[in-house]
Length: 111
Length: 154
Image 1 (spheres, rainbow over the protein chains, first blue to last red):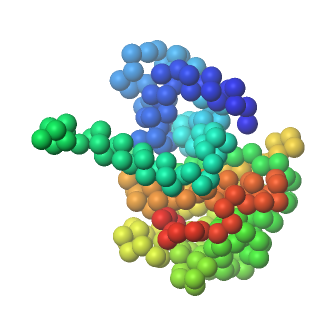
Image 2 (cartoon, one colour):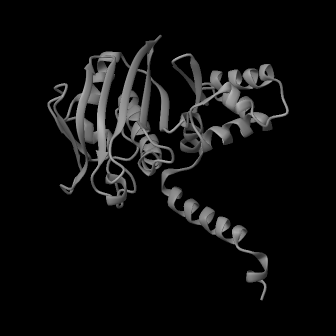
């Protein structure tokens, strides 16, 4: 897979927002993905095209609709390339700790 | 849309025939499925079962489609986590399409309900299993030969 295409696709906040929406609900039509975005349909379609070219989004036809799915493969490739296997457990523990600390109301931690 | 879907699209440098063999040869499957065995004779309508290295049954189901070297579909139910078993059937489809020197492998695992816990669980498991498969086919080595901990997913 072309790493440059993946990083270029991820460098844009709108495209990351589209990936977030697909992560929440995978398998959405263009019209659903346009909902609530201050952007023309054409602009959203163009962003989706960039994501699709980078294999971050996969498209399936279902009847008359074209549904967009998040494809985890390129990001998994990035993780496997730079995160050694043996570090995974420690990193998961650290990231769980960070999440716990950040979601805890601050007053609880400062008595 | 009351459906939960996990989709995975990867490109593997192999022929469709070689990838098909890797996906369906029950002697070869444990090498990339981290020790998990598949028990089936791949007859359409016949039983299909996944078994953990320690002998516990992971998942059961039925072969729905078997079209070498293009399409393999399995009716699939989890067996080892009661809350997932309760959810009932899911559908797992493997599609192989030649693309130049590689094969585009699309795995679609879906369940006919919103917010499926089973689909959430397999979404964590499939990437590791399928990346193992790719690595094994392309380099002859799996990344993770066997599950080291309690399986956290289907």
